[in-house]
Structure formats: structure tokens, C-alpha cells
Length: 222
Length: 201
Image (cartoon, rainbow over all chains, first blue to last red; front, top):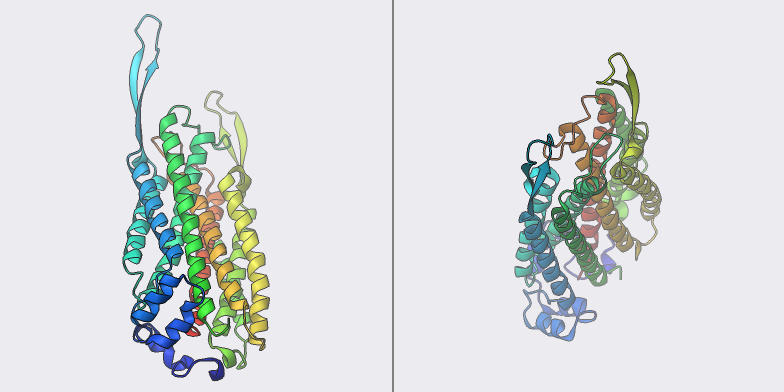
């Protein structure tokens, strides 16, 4: 860490331990320099006015709201996904056809359960992060949490999409028959939930990259 | 399972040991994080390579008796490319393996003293991207492995791991290594982002 490139009072060794707490107490000038350039004018005004609060970037707030909405929608759509079909089975011609009700429920598949739980967790976390977006002290925890939420969301989307593909196509090698020809509406809803969640995951990725860009621009490397 | 795991741990251990001496005292000159960064990248390379090999060699042929005709055996092979999720995992591990090799070189360059003006930023961005790729690949392959292990009675998907035991051990090990790789990528992102953050303001 070269001391010449770091502003006074911010040498790396000292900051390593107390950067989170220290940053919240950091007064105006450095903050104005760091954020004034590349954020909206309203954000710059907010930043210079109150030292303890981070300037609010409209783009990242919009993305965050979008992440909350999309994960909520996909969790709810998947969570209420349920279909009962009555199938007629003819045993012999003499008897009338037997009616067998068949139910598809999201909780029958562990991948879908994981998907719903992961989406709900990411939704709750993003809502909490949205509430804390003005606090500078929460910046690092929110970023780490965003990263974990991203990994969780992507793995959940992967698992649910994989289950959906199995349901759509089956796997002839291990004789897993496709089920979406029976439960068409169920499959459509599950697919919609997966796609919405995937879009939310992309939004989360972009949000995280924007945050990294913000940090990069305020660093001495920029 | 035991042999595979022992193999992979020794391999990754060797790689980590090989990486540890390469950043000498000069590593700590710029930042003490650079050495950890390089070690994690070497570990990532070892883990993804091991997962790749374990997954690519997952192949088993078993003879299954035909219930209708007693005495007749049908040989049915199981390969990783029978499932799109496993192919995705293979590709993701392949790509991440190359990526870790390239970024280890970049990390080495940073250690040797060049100024990390934009490199660190790009590294963090790409790490996030690859963490997302590995996480989704692990999720999908883990999903299909879980169905293979437990089956799903509601959809009449029978479990296959009681028949293809060796194949399933390979798949399970590979999924576990993919999980380790995604954790390493998340750790790398946190490490480098924190490095960047320390320089901020």
C-alpha cells in the first residue's frame, strides 16, 4: 500500500480494522470528491448535506426495487403453483372409465422448494438493503450479502430450470418420462417463475457490478 | 468416493503448496492480499481441473436384467453427456479452469510490481460473473444429481444411484468440487473488492 496515493488518515493498515465504522464518521470533503462526479446531481446534494449518509444512486435503487419485485413475484408464482388433473383410465370396455385425480404441487420437487426459499430470502435481504441504502456503514455488509444472494439466486434458478427441462423433455437414458404433457399449466407457471427470477438475478448482477464500479471510481486506482 | 476425494484433495493441496512459495516477501510489498489472491486462484484452478476430470471420466455400463425375459441382460451405459445439466457443469468448469489460469498470471504480474490501475476492477467484475456461472452450474447439476440419488415418486422418476453407484460417486464429487469452486470465487470477489474498498475515498 503506497502511502502517497492514499489520502491522509487513510493509510491501509490503520483502516483495515476500522474501515466500516470509520467510514460512517467520515466528514464531507472526501465524500463529495468521491461521489459528486459520477452520480446524479440530487445524489451529490444529498451526499454533501449529510456526512453520515451515502448519496443515493437512482439507478441502483431502481435496480434494487426491481430485484425485490422480481424475486417476490417468482416466489409467489412458484409458491401458488398447483394443478390437479383428472385422468380417465379405461380398464376394460365393460366398466365405465375410472377417473383418477392427479395433482402436481410445487412442494413435490426439492428443486422448486429450494427455488422458493432462495427467492424469498433474496427478496427479504434486498428489501432490507433497500431500507439501509442511505447508510454508509452498511455498504460493505450489503455488498457481501449481495454477492451471497447472487450465488444463491443463480444456483436456485439453475436447479429449478434443470427440473423444468427434465419435466419438459424427460430423460430417455434413465427412463424419466416427461410430465409437462400432463401438467401443462403447472409447467407454464413454473417456467414463468424461473424466467422472472433469472431476470431478477441478472438485475442483481448488474447492481453488484455498478456497486463495484462506484467503489473503483472512488478508489485511488481510478 | 474415498479414492476420488483423496485424489482431489492431494492435488489441490499440491497446487496450493506450489503456489505458496511463489509469492515471496515481495508479495506483501504492495498488499498482503496479493499472495492470498494468487493462492486462491491456484486452488481454484486445481479444484476446477479435478472436477473436470472427475466429471469427464464419469462413465459406467451396467447389465440390467430384462423383467419380461428371464436370463437376458441388457447393458445400459451411463455417461455425463446424457444430461444437459452435467454438460453445462462440464463447460462451466472448463471455462473457469482457463479463467483461473489466466487470472493467476495477471495476479502474478500484480505481485511482481506493476500498478493495478484497472486490473483489480476488471478482476472483481469477472470474478462476480464467473461466480454466477459456477453457482448456476452447480445448482443445476446438483438438482439432477439429487433426483438421481433420491428419485421423485410424484413424477415416477426412479433413483438410479443404486444401479450406477460408481457413476453417481463421480457426479457427486464433481458437483461438490463445483460448489467449492463457487465458494472460492465468492471469496476471491470479497477479497479483491475489499482491497479496492480500502483504497476508496
